[in-house]
Amino acid sequence: MINPADRAYEDPDEERASTATPTEAELEREAPALPALDRSPPPSPKHDAYAALRHGNYRIYSAGSVISVLGHHMVSTALAWEVYDRTASKLALGWWRESR
Image (cartoon, rainbow, N blue to C red; front, side, top):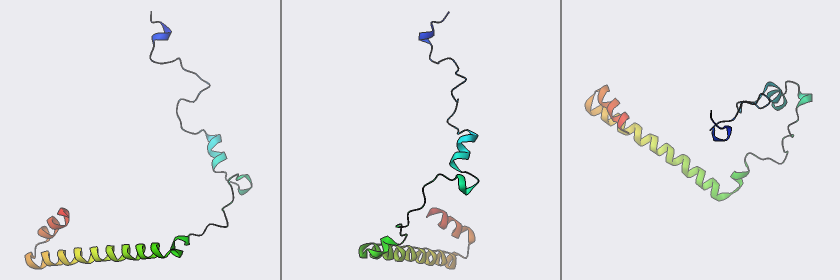
């Protein structure tokens, strides 16, 4: 017989949940169907979604990022056009697109 202290597991406990999955009651408390039962804090009136745009450095960074992405797409389209123009092969265009 195996000594209980030497086992790698413990006896089942019916009072303790076997998983971390929330119960129905916990789910109801987190997302109530009625607004009167909603216990979540109200949204802060001080939150401003555009607060970062008030900083000049962030505006420069975001404008530069947009220009960079647009430039990347323009170069990518121009190169794809050139590959198709030179080869007239959809297969070569597909290979080029997959290699990027």
